[in-house]
Length: 58
Image 1 (tube, one colour):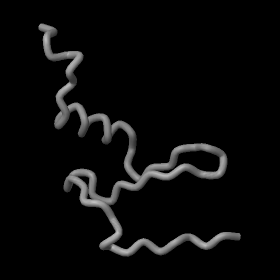
Image 2 (tube, helix red, strand yellow):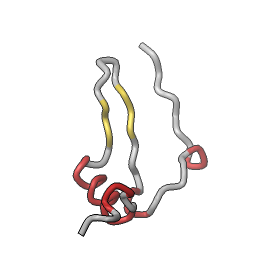
Image 3 (tube, helix red, strand yellow):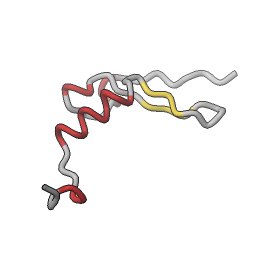
């Protein structure tokens, strides 16, 4: 059994304060595991990111 590598605080990337603690990984079955619900991630992206495809819609 392989040991998980310990993650030091300085090894973590800088993230927006609303996404603090977000981590994503892929398990041995190919499933995506994340620490934050996908709905919260989508809500954050809708609020903070500009969608080029929707710019000219009224």
